[in-house]
Picture 1: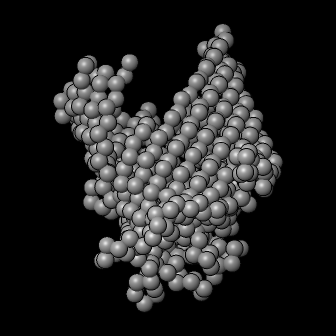
Picture 2: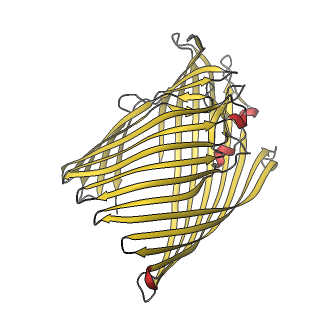
Picture 3: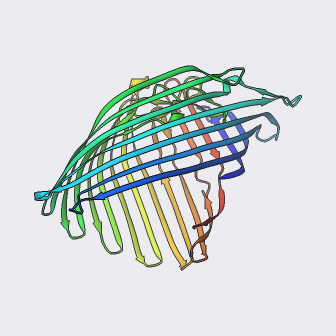
Length: 454
């Protein structure tokens, strides 16, 4: 994929009394190129019993990214250009995946599963920034905005589970053992363009993840389930980047090489009803998160990823799909929950809580056998942060697809964020800082894509 575009970043920072502290329109002229390919091999063996099988999968994917940006800072209301700068970003990522899964059905409806999963990430990031003098037009490298780092992660896990069925009732219990090793390096380029390691951080962690699920078949088309599981959210390589990102001077961001993995304990009671043209699934849940990863702003007004401590949420989820007639499909999902964050471990005032909601929906219509229309959207209410909240925002998108040549060729026209509802307002309200930041960029984007299937 290779394209050029223009985007305007409209930012406003307000003082507690509502007066404007800082306002800027940052013009962004952006060229991007992305190249990716993947190779995958699969092998599957079935034993005498069709439910007894062994499968092996190997996957390798390569991703390269080249981004060139030129920025202009304009003072609103005057048209005066206050500053010009550029930024060149390059990424090179290699991902390896290997899995081996074995399953066997024993007598008396005992089902056993075991296997291995290995993932390797090898990523390199390079960013170069230059400022230009408005007087003489000379570009000058900016050392503190130029950085180079690499990220490597090896994850290996073994898992096993047993599943037992008694008529309408079934129970499953499993355990996953995981070892995760990662290394993060920053580099200083030498005069001869070689690289020497400036800083290196590495660690190896071991963890066990249990899982239990109890299910009851309440009818031919419905079931009730109670489940507990533990899972992990790991920071990406970019989240560990210790360098400040200057692409948007009114919203400086910085990674954190000391980020820990976020662990989630989840308990859920759910119901599932599946009919001919309708699928309906409500659920109530409780989730406890330790080392929760969130973005906070420090005293220098730099936004940084932090492990903010423990948090928990109680909620109700609802999802479904309805196909009342052949040409119409309606999908919906919703979530209402009470979110609670205890940021006192990282120096914030008190434990905070808020009732939050988010809703998603989509409508697909087959106008003709070769013409399809889709409308989708979402709404997210005010969201809690350790230092305040992010105000509600929403988006509505539409797309029209036309197929040609026996559906081998597809032309798709899409419009994103039709009503410009993605403006993000962040409110900081702590004993040390009171701030309101408003950000809005690339309000409406229209894409025309052509896809041909061989």
